[in-house]
Length: 458
Image (cartoon, rainbow, N blue to C red; front, side, top):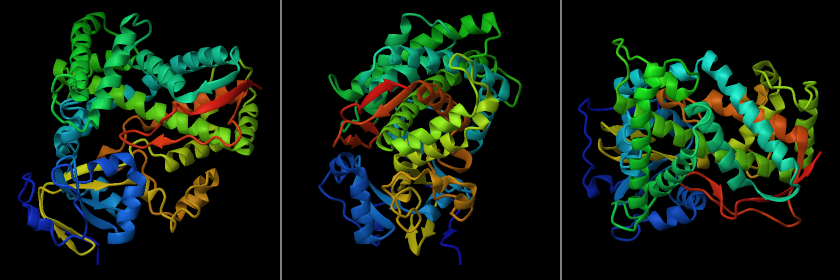
């Protein structure tokens, strides 16, 4: 008997009455703010304490609404794979990202999502990807060369943020976008910070108001650029590709669609990669033996320091990919994922009404002891083909899964391995004795002090 089944076919997006979820164990905390502050303060500890007390299905109250949290690989499969089209991503993420990234790919559902995703996927085909690699490779090599001239302490997170923004700007907007880049950077920083602001309305002086203003600046920039790119034609960057992309009916994507996709993709590629690469470098600094193993793998490529990286070199960097995957397991870039049930369903014996806000939690799944022995330890060998064969396919979900699986997954691997190649070929990284970074896990993990490391030329 499966753990879940579909009930009524009628779509329902109205949040259920409070007492209709009373049969689900849990604690809703304070009036109005519920458990929001506890979740923001310690998302991992909060979920683990609730799971220990109530089990893998529990009721909570966050961001002004009662919600149901579903935990573990089976929950991830039910919600992400979603063959029965039970869960709306648009109405799940809407309250968090709707004012800031409206109609981005994550805020679309079902057929609309499928069509938009298909149009967007042209930007991730092998031709454009080759051109991104050329640009990424040049940008990373130049930045690592700079770091090499300034050995000593370095804050990884701000350095990565600057690098990934520059790389996203080149791959996504095209080379030489000029002085606007700082303005665009600031706008994105404001938009992401506003995504988890406690005050959800753009009242003057609030984080949400800064985020909404950031969006205004981004929209103005893209609006001005679209006709220029269309007239110019060509261009291997993502923006130029989208300006020429066509939908199922053979029509060019609308200006509004391009603006929405670009602002969402720039945010997604820039912030999640900053987080993931920072975590990756942090783990290598803490585990010198793994750093050396990856450096040995890279030297086997036989590339001189100034030779470009080609995709066949990346294919041979299997240990580097495993180490990156393990860093993503420890700190997935999107620790929890909201959805809204559009119809009634049951899971693990609990009947859950349509309209309920539900959440799954990759961060929790990635640290379940019965799946990942010693879950806090950094152990890339968990990702050999052999080890992965015996695991539930939704036990490791840093990129989500199902129809909403991250479109930029290969772009992320490409950037991470290209980065590992240049960084480890030129630099070694270590931590000061006794140092341990303190991470803020929401909305996208980041070290509170920037993650301090010591870099030295190899």
